[in-house]
Image (tube, rainbow over all chains, first blue to last red; front, side, top):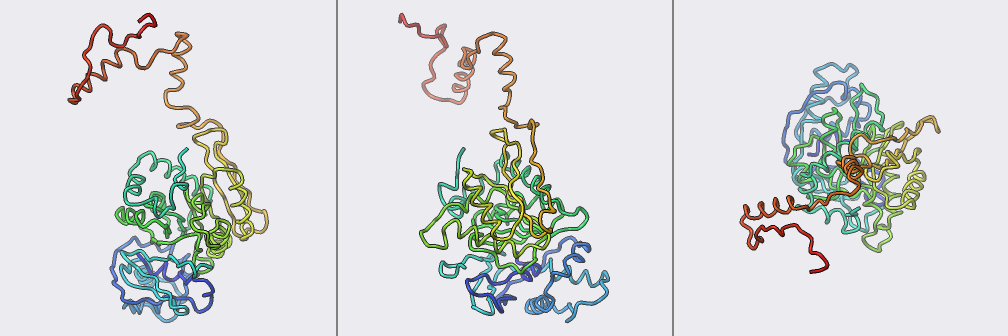
Length: 123
Length: 283
């Protein structure tokens, strides 16, 4: 269950990979949509944490183009609903996430990304 | 006290069988639930803002289920694939990661509003290989520094764990402090053998000592306190007769034999007037 909410927080943690290690790129993904409960308060609190360009980029990679390039000033219900859908309802079930810097592959299987590192990659 | 962390590393110890056993055990469920509620209490999150939490060592989602119920959005990490599989079957809401916390996290700074971890830290205290990156201090340091940076300022992280000595507590707290955390140890029911629980409460930020360490719970545990079940009744009976009645008296033996016969067990001795009687030294 890699949702974009966590993808937006996830950077590569390989040893020495400290710059340009975010966002991880998707490859060969299978996406499943699952409805979840709409929680506007949570979203309002979460918006400051979002790296917007990364979120829009990742959403487009997954084929969802409903988000604008810039976060709007006014947070109306319609916008929050789209955001809710993008952040919390798109689940990546299978695929690979690739670090743009060191090219480490994080495989996603059954919805769970494998974040384990080999011994030489541990910081 | 059994110490599974001394038997095998977690991803091996919690294989398919152990993972289901662990999750289905109602006593385990109860203990985990109680500790999760207590951890949330210690986390002291503002009541009306839905928070985004990290569950470190989420396992099969016993603690995650409670986070779901309480309305938190969360992400969980665990190193045992079998446990995560059980969590998937149980359909918890949070995002799950297969991750070794001793290798550190890759979350962006300020990602989480808090972190909880139930019965996990003790697993970090054993070295699996002689490689320098798998020494416990190194893994703990890596864990705490990356966790510190992925938490919001100000926020808290609460860890329940089972230390086997004061040295371990010392090691963990000193490394956490080096990583920049404030806070310390809270012990619930310190005088009880069974109900004693050790919590490590860590603070990120908060302006130097303005955050008070919460008090540990004390006094008599209501249920499951220091006393075993029916202990008081046993004590009472003892004082009444002066001598304690044998548990395996004649009626108990007869009952057991009856049960074995009913189950069709071979070689159950016949009942007689000698059943349950002591063999005297004259014999």
